[in-house]
Image: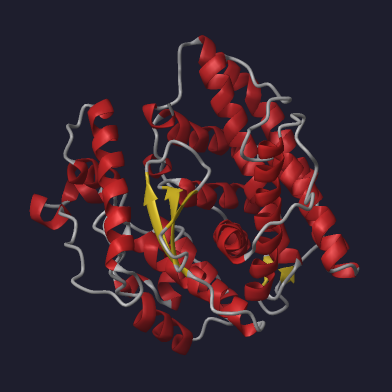
Length: 428
Protein backbone atom coordinates (compact mmCIF):
# COMPACT_ATOMS: atom_id res chain seq x y z
CA UNK A 1 0.00 0.00 0.00
CA UNK A 2 3.01 2.31 0.35
CA UNK A 3 3.29 3.37 -3.26
CA UNK A 4 -0.47 3.79 -3.57
CA UNK A 5 -0.30 6.25 -0.69
CA UNK A 6 2.62 8.00 -2.35
CA UNK A 7 0.58 8.29 -5.53
CA UNK A 8 -2.27 9.94 -3.64
CA UNK A 9 0.11 12.27 -1.83
CA UNK A 10 2.10 13.17 -4.91
CA UNK A 11 -0.94 14.09 -6.94
CA UNK A 12 -2.83 15.98 -4.28
CA UNK A 13 -0.62 17.61 -1.71
CA UNK A 14 0.92 20.53 -3.57
CA UNK A 15 -0.56 24.02 -3.40
CA UNK A 16 -3.11 24.81 -6.08
CA UNK A 17 -1.71 28.34 -6.33
CA UNK A 18 1.92 27.28 -6.42
CA UNK A 19 2.62 28.81 -9.79
CA UNK A 20 1.33 32.22 -8.79
CA UNK A 21 3.35 32.22 -5.57
CA UNK A 22 6.75 31.70 -7.20
CA UNK A 23 9.14 34.07 -8.86
CA UNK A 24 9.87 33.73 -12.58
CA UNK A 25 13.27 32.22 -11.85
CA UNK A 26 11.82 29.60 -9.51
CA UNK A 27 9.16 28.67 -12.07
CA UNK A 28 11.60 28.08 -14.90
CA UNK A 29 11.84 24.47 -16.06
CA UNK A 30 15.08 22.76 -15.13
CA UNK A 31 17.59 22.28 -17.90
CA UNK A 32 17.92 18.92 -19.60
CA UNK A 33 20.34 16.58 -17.80
CA UNK A 34 23.70 16.24 -19.49
CA UNK A 35 23.46 12.46 -19.37
CA UNK A 36 20.99 9.87 -18.14
CA UNK A 37 21.55 6.13 -18.27
CA UNK A 38 17.83 5.47 -18.50
CA UNK A 39 17.21 7.18 -21.81
CA UNK A 40 19.16 7.77 -24.99
CA UNK A 41 19.82 11.29 -26.24
CA UNK A 42 17.82 10.47 -29.37
CA UNK A 43 14.73 9.46 -27.40
CA UNK A 44 14.90 12.45 -25.06
CA UNK A 45 15.40 14.89 -27.93
CA UNK A 46 12.47 13.47 -29.85
CA UNK A 47 10.18 13.64 -26.81
CA UNK A 48 11.26 17.19 -26.04
CA UNK A 49 10.60 18.27 -29.63
CA UNK A 50 7.07 16.83 -29.46
CA UNK A 51 6.43 18.59 -26.16
CA UNK A 52 7.70 21.96 -27.35
CA UNK A 53 5.57 21.80 -30.47
CA UNK A 54 2.46 20.76 -28.50
CA UNK A 55 2.85 23.48 -25.85
CA UNK A 56 3.65 26.15 -28.42
CA UNK A 57 0.59 25.20 -30.47
CA UNK A 58 -1.63 25.18 -27.40
CA UNK A 59 -0.19 28.49 -26.23
CA UNK A 60 -1.20 30.21 -29.44
CA UNK A 61 -4.73 28.88 -29.11
CA UNK A 62 -4.92 29.94 -25.46
CA UNK A 63 -3.58 33.41 -26.16
CA UNK A 64 -0.42 32.77 -24.12
CA UNK A 65 2.00 33.15 -27.01
CA UNK A 66 4.23 30.59 -28.66
CA UNK A 67 6.86 30.12 -25.93
CA UNK A 68 6.32 26.50 -24.80
CA UNK A 69 7.92 27.09 -21.38
CA UNK A 70 5.40 29.85 -20.59
CA UNK A 71 2.50 27.52 -21.39
CA UNK A 72 4.02 24.66 -19.44
CA UNK A 73 4.62 26.81 -16.38
CA UNK A 74 1.05 28.10 -16.46
CA UNK A 75 -0.25 24.53 -16.20
CA UNK A 76 2.24 22.92 -13.82
CA UNK A 77 2.56 22.88 -10.05
CA UNK A 78 5.61 22.88 -7.80
CA UNK A 79 7.66 19.82 -6.96
CA UNK A 80 6.32 18.17 -3.84
CA UNK A 81 8.81 18.62 -0.95
CA UNK A 82 10.48 15.37 0.10
CA UNK A 83 9.26 15.85 3.66
CA UNK A 84 5.71 15.33 2.43
CA UNK A 85 6.48 11.63 1.99
CA UNK A 86 6.23 10.35 5.55
CA UNK A 87 3.65 8.42 7.61
CA UNK A 88 2.53 11.66 9.22
CA UNK A 89 2.02 13.42 5.89
CA UNK A 90 0.12 10.45 4.48
CA UNK A 91 -2.40 10.98 7.26
CA UNK A 92 -2.70 14.68 6.43
CA UNK A 93 -2.51 14.56 2.63
CA UNK A 94 -6.25 14.59 1.99
CA UNK A 95 -7.03 17.16 4.64
CA UNK A 96 -8.10 14.73 7.33
CA UNK A 97 -6.20 12.54 9.74
CA UNK A 98 -5.78 8.97 8.53
CA UNK A 99 -5.82 6.43 11.37
CA UNK A 100 -2.36 5.12 12.19
CA UNK A 101 -3.49 1.53 11.62
CA UNK A 102 -3.98 2.23 7.90
CA UNK A 103 -0.23 2.79 7.64
CA UNK A 104 0.69 -0.76 8.53
CA UNK A 105 2.74 -2.15 5.70
CA UNK A 106 4.35 1.25 5.04
CA UNK A 107 7.42 1.09 7.30
CA UNK A 108 9.95 3.88 7.51
CA UNK A 109 12.51 1.71 5.72
CA UNK A 110 10.28 1.41 2.65
CA UNK A 111 9.66 5.16 2.60
CA UNK A 112 13.40 5.82 2.84
CA UNK A 113 14.04 3.36 0.02
CA UNK A 114 11.46 5.06 -2.18
CA UNK A 115 12.92 8.50 -1.48
CA UNK A 116 16.43 7.31 -2.22
CA UNK A 117 15.43 6.03 -5.65
CA UNK A 118 12.63 8.34 -6.73
CA UNK A 119 12.49 11.27 -4.32
CA UNK A 120 14.78 13.47 -6.40
CA UNK A 121 14.09 12.09 -9.84
CA UNK A 122 15.22 14.37 -12.64
CA UNK A 123 12.64 14.04 -15.43
CA UNK A 124 14.07 13.53 -18.93
CA UNK A 125 12.85 16.89 -20.23
CA UNK A 126 11.94 20.23 -18.64
CA UNK A 127 8.28 19.68 -19.61
CA UNK A 128 7.45 16.97 -17.06
CA UNK A 129 5.75 17.41 -13.70
CA UNK A 130 8.37 15.92 -11.34
CA UNK A 131 5.76 14.98 -8.75
CA UNK A 132 3.90 12.78 -11.21
CA UNK A 133 7.00 11.55 -13.00
CA UNK A 134 8.47 9.93 -9.88
CA UNK A 135 5.24 7.97 -9.33
CA UNK A 136 5.02 6.83 -12.96
CA UNK A 137 8.67 5.83 -13.01
CA UNK A 138 8.27 3.67 -9.91
CA UNK A 139 5.30 1.88 -11.45
CA UNK A 140 7.05 1.43 -14.79
CA UNK A 141 10.06 -0.08 -13.02
CA UNK A 142 7.73 -2.40 -11.07
CA UNK A 143 6.11 -3.59 -14.30
CA UNK A 144 9.45 -4.27 -15.98
CA UNK A 145 10.75 -6.09 -12.89
CA UNK A 146 7.61 -8.25 -12.81
CA UNK A 147 8.04 -9.04 -16.49
CA UNK A 148 11.66 -10.19 -16.17
CA UNK A 149 10.96 -12.09 -12.93
CA UNK A 150 8.62 -14.34 -14.88
CA UNK A 151 11.45 -15.46 -17.13
CA UNK A 152 10.86 -13.15 -20.07
CA UNK A 153 13.66 -11.26 -21.76
CA UNK A 154 14.37 -7.72 -20.61
CA UNK A 155 11.80 -5.44 -22.25
CA UNK A 156 12.84 -2.59 -24.54
CA UNK A 157 13.45 0.77 -22.94
CA UNK A 158 10.27 2.83 -22.58
CA UNK A 159 10.57 6.59 -22.16
CA UNK A 160 7.41 8.02 -20.61
CA UNK A 161 6.25 11.51 -21.47
CA UNK A 162 3.23 13.77 -20.98
CA UNK A 163 1.91 16.64 -23.04
CA UNK A 164 -1.42 18.19 -24.09
CA UNK A 165 -2.37 15.52 -26.65
CA UNK A 166 -6.07 16.39 -27.02
CA UNK A 167 -7.09 12.75 -26.46
CA UNK A 168 -7.20 10.26 -23.62
CA UNK A 169 -5.57 7.67 -25.87
CA UNK A 170 -1.81 7.36 -25.42
CA UNK A 171 0.56 7.84 -28.33
CA UNK A 172 3.43 5.43 -28.95
CA UNK A 173 6.55 6.33 -30.91
CA UNK A 174 8.99 3.65 -31.99
CA UNK A 175 12.63 4.55 -32.40
CA UNK A 176 14.86 2.87 -35.03
CA UNK A 177 16.04 -0.59 -34.04
CA UNK A 178 13.03 -1.28 -31.76
CA UNK A 179 15.26 -1.09 -28.67
CA UNK A 180 13.56 1.99 -27.30
CA UNK A 181 10.07 3.44 -27.34
CA UNK A 182 8.38 6.65 -26.29
CA UNK A 183 4.91 6.57 -24.77
CA UNK A 184 3.14 9.92 -24.50
CA UNK A 185 0.12 10.40 -22.23
CA UNK A 186 -2.36 13.24 -22.03
CA UNK A 187 -0.92 15.47 -19.30
CA UNK A 188 -4.08 15.51 -17.19
CA UNK A 189 -4.96 11.81 -17.45
CA UNK A 190 -3.47 10.75 -14.14
CA UNK A 191 -4.98 13.67 -12.24
CA UNK A 192 -8.31 12.70 -13.78
CA UNK A 193 -7.79 9.14 -12.51
CA UNK A 194 -6.93 10.54 -9.09
CA UNK A 195 -10.19 12.48 -8.78
CA UNK A 196 -12.34 9.68 -10.20
CA UNK A 197 -10.79 7.11 -7.84
CA UNK A 198 -11.72 9.25 -4.84
CA UNK A 199 -15.33 9.58 -6.03
CA UNK A 200 -15.67 5.81 -6.38
CA UNK A 201 -13.91 5.16 -3.06
CA UNK A 202 -16.59 7.11 -1.20
CA UNK A 203 -19.25 4.49 -1.95
CA UNK A 204 -17.04 1.44 -1.39
CA UNK A 205 -16.07 0.18 2.08
CA UNK A 206 -12.71 0.93 3.68
CA UNK A 207 -9.89 -1.46 2.81
CA UNK A 208 -8.51 -3.53 5.64
CA UNK A 209 -4.76 -2.78 5.41
CA UNK A 210 -3.86 -6.13 6.98
CA UNK A 211 -5.94 -8.42 4.75
CA UNK A 212 -5.81 -6.19 1.69
CA UNK A 213 -9.55 -6.51 1.18
CA UNK A 214 -12.69 -4.61 2.05
CA UNK A 215 -13.52 -4.44 5.73
CA UNK A 216 -17.21 -5.06 5.07
CA UNK A 217 -19.62 -6.18 2.38
CA UNK A 218 -19.93 -3.91 -0.66
CA UNK A 219 -23.32 -2.22 -1.04
CA UNK A 220 -23.09 0.36 -3.81
CA UNK A 221 -26.73 1.45 -3.69
CA UNK A 222 -26.48 2.21 0.00
CA UNK A 223 -23.22 4.07 -0.60
CA UNK A 224 -24.75 6.25 -3.31
CA UNK A 225 -27.76 7.07 -1.15
CA UNK A 226 -25.50 8.01 1.76
CA UNK A 227 -23.33 10.32 -0.36
CA UNK A 228 -25.47 12.49 -2.66
CA UNK A 229 -22.58 14.99 -2.89
CA UNK A 230 -20.66 12.72 -5.27
CA UNK A 231 -22.82 13.87 -8.19
CA UNK A 232 -21.66 17.44 -7.69
CA UNK A 233 -18.07 16.28 -7.39
CA UNK A 234 -18.31 14.31 -10.64
CA UNK A 235 -19.69 17.35 -12.43
CA UNK A 236 -16.87 19.51 -11.03
CA UNK A 237 -14.22 17.03 -12.21
CA UNK A 238 -15.72 16.78 -15.70
CA UNK A 239 -16.07 20.57 -15.90
CA UNK A 240 -12.45 21.12 -14.86
CA UNK A 241 -11.10 18.60 -17.33
CA UNK A 242 -13.46 19.06 -20.28
CA UNK A 243 -14.35 22.76 -20.06
CA UNK A 244 -11.37 24.32 -18.27
CA UNK A 245 -8.93 21.87 -19.80
CA UNK A 246 -7.12 20.76 -16.64
CA UNK A 247 -8.39 18.69 -13.65
CA UNK A 248 -5.82 20.49 -11.49
CA UNK A 249 -8.16 23.45 -11.58
CA UNK A 250 -10.55 21.99 -9.01
CA UNK A 251 -10.16 22.04 -5.27
CA UNK A 252 -9.27 18.63 -3.90
CA UNK A 253 -12.28 16.60 -2.79
CA UNK A 254 -11.91 15.71 0.89
CA UNK A 255 -12.91 12.12 1.46
CA UNK A 256 -13.33 10.36 4.78
CA UNK A 257 -9.99 9.17 6.14
CA UNK A 258 -11.26 5.59 6.32
CA UNK A 259 -11.55 5.58 2.52
CA UNK A 260 -8.02 6.85 1.85
CA UNK A 261 -6.54 3.42 1.25
CA UNK A 262 -9.53 2.43 -0.88
CA UNK A 263 -8.90 5.42 -3.13
CA UNK A 264 -5.16 4.76 -3.13
CA UNK A 265 -5.57 1.11 -4.14
CA UNK A 266 -8.00 2.03 -6.91
CA UNK A 267 -5.78 4.81 -8.22
CA UNK A 268 -2.68 2.64 -8.30
CA UNK A 269 -4.43 -0.19 -10.11
CA UNK A 270 -5.81 2.28 -12.68
CA UNK A 271 -2.35 3.70 -13.27
CA UNK A 272 -0.72 0.27 -13.44
CA UNK A 273 -3.23 -0.82 -16.06
CA UNK A 274 -2.53 2.29 -18.16
CA UNK A 275 1.21 1.64 -18.03
CA UNK A 276 0.89 -2.13 -18.38
CA UNK A 277 -1.30 -1.70 -21.46
CA UNK A 278 1.30 0.51 -23.13
CA UNK A 279 4.13 -1.85 -22.22
CA UNK A 280 2.00 -4.60 -23.71
CA UNK A 281 2.13 -2.94 -27.11
CA UNK A 282 5.89 -3.42 -27.19
CA UNK A 283 6.27 -6.76 -25.43
CA UNK A 284 3.85 -8.82 -27.47
CA UNK A 285 3.72 -9.32 -31.21
CA UNK A 286 0.09 -9.53 -32.27
CA UNK A 287 -0.68 -12.13 -34.88
CA UNK A 288 -3.76 -12.71 -36.97
CA UNK A 289 -5.86 -14.18 -34.16
CA UNK A 290 -9.16 -12.56 -33.30
CA UNK A 291 -8.55 -11.39 -29.74
CA UNK A 292 -11.90 -9.82 -28.98
CA UNK A 293 -15.30 -8.77 -30.35
CA UNK A 294 -15.00 -7.50 -33.94
CA UNK A 295 -15.87 -4.00 -35.17
CA UNK A 296 -18.96 -3.47 -37.29
CA UNK A 297 -16.69 -2.50 -40.18
CA UNK A 298 -15.28 -5.33 -42.26
CA UNK A 299 -12.14 -3.35 -42.93
CA UNK A 300 -9.27 -5.72 -42.00
CA UNK A 301 -7.10 -2.77 -40.98
CA UNK A 302 -9.61 -1.80 -38.28
CA UNK A 303 -9.91 -5.42 -37.14
CA UNK A 304 -6.11 -5.57 -36.80
CA UNK A 305 -5.97 -2.33 -34.80
CA UNK A 306 -8.68 -3.51 -32.44
CA UNK A 307 -6.83 -6.79 -31.97
CA UNK A 308 -3.72 -4.86 -30.99
CA UNK A 309 -5.68 -3.06 -28.27
CA UNK A 310 -7.33 -6.24 -26.99
CA UNK A 311 -3.93 -7.91 -26.84
CA UNK A 312 -2.34 -4.99 -24.99
CA UNK A 313 -5.25 -5.00 -22.52
CA UNK A 314 -4.61 -8.67 -21.81
CA UNK A 315 -0.91 -8.12 -21.24
CA UNK A 316 -1.59 -5.00 -19.16
CA UNK A 317 -3.94 -6.94 -16.89
CA UNK A 318 -1.37 -9.70 -16.47
CA UNK A 319 1.38 -7.23 -15.63
CA UNK A 320 -0.80 -5.36 -13.18
CA UNK A 321 -1.56 -8.60 -11.35
CA UNK A 322 2.13 -9.56 -11.35
CA UNK A 323 2.97 -6.27 -9.61
CA UNK A 324 0.14 -6.22 -7.05
CA UNK A 325 -0.37 -9.95 -6.48
CA UNK A 326 -4.03 -9.20 -5.74
CA UNK A 327 -6.47 -10.02 -8.52
CA UNK A 328 -9.62 -8.51 -7.00
CA UNK A 329 -8.13 -5.13 -6.09
CA UNK A 330 -6.21 -4.82 -9.34
CA UNK A 331 -8.88 -5.91 -11.80
CA UNK A 332 -11.34 -3.32 -10.50
CA UNK A 333 -8.84 -0.58 -11.43
CA UNK A 334 -8.64 -1.76 -15.02
CA UNK A 335 -12.42 -1.76 -15.32
CA UNK A 336 -12.72 1.56 -13.50
CA UNK A 337 -10.32 3.19 -15.95
CA UNK A 338 -12.34 2.03 -18.94
CA UNK A 339 -15.68 3.07 -17.42
CA UNK A 340 -14.32 6.48 -16.42
CA UNK A 341 -13.04 6.97 -19.97
CA UNK A 342 -16.53 6.11 -21.18
CA UNK A 343 -18.09 8.74 -18.88
CA UNK A 344 -15.55 11.28 -20.12
CA UNK A 345 -16.18 10.53 -23.80
CA UNK A 346 -19.96 10.65 -23.41
CA UNK A 347 -19.73 14.01 -21.68
CA UNK A 348 -17.30 15.31 -24.30
CA UNK A 349 -19.60 14.24 -27.13
CA UNK A 350 -22.63 15.88 -25.50
CA UNK A 351 -20.80 19.17 -24.98
CA UNK A 352 -19.47 19.17 -28.54
CA UNK A 353 -22.53 17.97 -30.45
CA UNK A 354 -25.46 17.88 -28.04
CA UNK A 355 -25.76 14.09 -28.18
CA UNK A 356 -23.89 10.84 -27.69
CA UNK A 357 -24.13 8.06 -30.26
CA UNK A 358 -23.62 4.72 -28.46
CA UNK A 359 -23.19 2.94 -31.81
CA UNK A 360 -20.28 5.11 -32.94
CA UNK A 361 -16.92 3.34 -32.88
CA UNK A 362 -13.30 4.31 -33.32
CA UNK A 363 -11.22 2.96 -36.22
CA UNK A 364 -8.30 2.43 -33.82
CA UNK A 365 -9.78 1.41 -30.43
CA UNK A 366 -12.67 -0.86 -29.41
CA UNK A 367 -15.41 0.79 -27.32
CA UNK A 368 -14.44 1.18 -23.68
CA UNK A 369 -17.28 -0.95 -22.34
CA UNK A 370 -16.54 -3.67 -24.90
CA UNK A 371 -12.95 -3.73 -23.68
CA UNK A 372 -14.22 -4.11 -20.13
CA UNK A 373 -16.42 -7.06 -21.08
CA UNK A 374 -13.51 -8.65 -22.92
CA UNK A 375 -11.30 -8.32 -19.83
CA UNK A 376 -13.88 -10.31 -17.88
CA UNK A 377 -13.63 -13.08 -20.47
CA UNK A 378 -9.84 -12.90 -20.35
CA UNK A 379 -9.48 -13.41 -16.60
CA UNK A 380 -12.02 -16.23 -16.65
CA UNK A 381 -9.90 -17.93 -19.30
CA UNK A 382 -6.49 -17.14 -17.77
CA UNK A 383 -7.28 -17.50 -14.06
CA UNK A 384 -10.56 -19.35 -13.49
CA UNK A 385 -11.64 -19.68 -9.90
CA UNK A 386 -13.22 -18.03 -6.88
CA UNK A 387 -10.96 -14.98 -6.85
CA UNK A 388 -11.80 -14.26 -10.49
CA UNK A 389 -15.51 -14.36 -9.76
CA UNK A 390 -15.00 -11.99 -6.83
CA UNK A 391 -13.05 -9.65 -9.11
CA UNK A 392 -15.80 -9.71 -11.73
CA UNK A 393 -18.49 -9.09 -9.11
CA UNK A 394 -16.61 -6.03 -7.87
CA UNK A 395 -16.13 -4.81 -11.44
CA UNK A 396 -19.85 -5.21 -12.09
CA UNK A 397 -20.59 -3.13 -9.01
CA UNK A 398 -18.30 -0.41 -10.33
CA UNK A 399 -20.12 -0.52 -13.65
CA UNK A 400 -23.46 -0.14 -11.88
CA UNK A 401 -22.20 2.75 -9.79
CA UNK A 402 -20.86 4.77 -12.73
CA UNK A 403 -23.84 3.93 -14.95
CA UNK A 404 -26.25 5.19 -12.31
CA UNK A 405 -24.17 8.28 -11.52
CA UNK A 406 -23.85 9.20 -15.18
CA UNK A 407 -27.58 8.65 -15.71
CA UNK A 408 -28.23 11.31 -13.09
CA UNK A 409 -25.49 13.65 -14.38
CA UNK A 410 -26.31 13.48 -18.10
CA UNK A 411 -29.22 16.01 -18.08
CA UNK A 412 -26.89 18.59 -16.54
CA UNK A 413 -24.49 18.29 -19.47
CA UNK A 414 -27.26 18.37 -22.05
CA UNK A 415 -28.37 21.65 -20.45
CA UNK A 416 -24.79 22.93 -20.48
CA UNK A 417 -24.58 22.32 -24.23
CA UNK A 418 -27.82 24.24 -24.79
CA UNK A 419 -26.31 27.11 -22.80
CA UNK A 420 -23.37 27.23 -25.22
CA UNK A 421 -20.76 25.48 -23.07
CA UNK A 422 -18.24 23.62 -25.22
CA UNK A 423 -15.13 21.49 -24.56
CA UNK A 424 -11.85 23.25 -23.90
CA UNK A 425 -9.70 23.98 -26.93
CA UNK A 426 -7.26 21.28 -25.83
CA UNK A 427 -9.82 18.69 -26.93
CA UNK A 428 -10.44 20.09 -30.40
